[in-house]
Image (cartoon, rainbow, N blue to C red; front, side, top):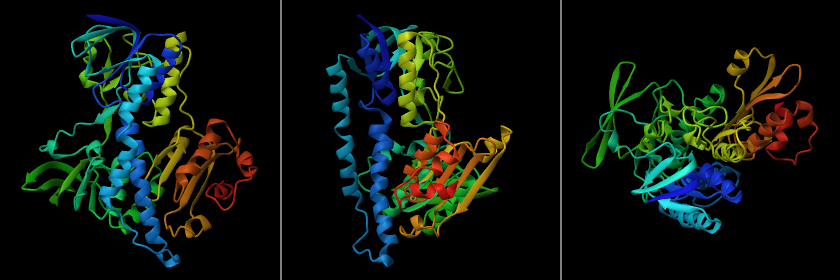
Length: 448
């Protein structure tokens, strides 16, 4: 039996839900499908639960830093209680999400979606045919192609651990490795990060990353750069991670190995060839309207589209763009200007706009304001040694080209720079703003 819809949406995360709800509100008949619990990566196994863990770990770290300032108490982290607190945010999401779809009149299906025609999707033997199909399946850990890869746990599994092992190795040096290493260390684990490149957190300014690495080492996180993982072997209850670095072979004994080496669009189960949806290098071939270049009835949004940074606000923005183009024809293009990026380490590191290299590659004339500001009030009152900034300012216009921050509360302060970049605010506009004092935002006048 075939059911007909105006739109079939594959996925139930931020991008998927955004497009489905907009099209349903416009009077379309909409179906939505997911083989995973409804709610998507951010709400269930990404941004939201991760941020809860970081919040608890940050409180523990801050209490320990401020002992000399008079803070008292245990300042330790009970993993089981923290995970129970985390589940108070995530456990209700699948049912609540599905109820919201049903209430709005969107037909919800559980199962693995596979194309069986240009606009037809098979779900557990039932065929859903749409005038349009949206791919919003999110991303999955990339395949490493190493012996013993099956012994690694994913970030999703890490976020469900009832107990934290004593020894943890993280393979990769991106967001997951940086954030999880800080949480696990504050929870009492011995942590080693294994990164094949010559530095971690490639999207961030290298000078600021160096300050974060020094802070990481100070709290006991071991980071091994230029280290390639050759394989993982299970030996009894423990795991042996075989690595190579500068021609030297080493083996690390650990209790848990976490895949933190990057994610790719979750496209493999979709049977894209049946729909004539082309992809290249594991990424969908899309035009500037988030539409498939080979099948005009198919659009994509969020991490599955991978047109912008892999962030929830970007997925929300993509949803708005894709829905507008579905409903009224192609007329909107994504605009990711001023999309801020934050790694929720302790302290956080944040970035928006251009890096120095990008600005030079574009031939722009700019000045750089750069300082390690650990002696500023914002850092000293938090007893935080890693605090600083690098801000790029256009010479002629005095507009903000890029801002790179590390330190207490910079995950909030970066949004002001994001606002400035997206709306072409100048140094004068920011300096003329009366910020509450003393706050992280009140430091902006001194950063520019």
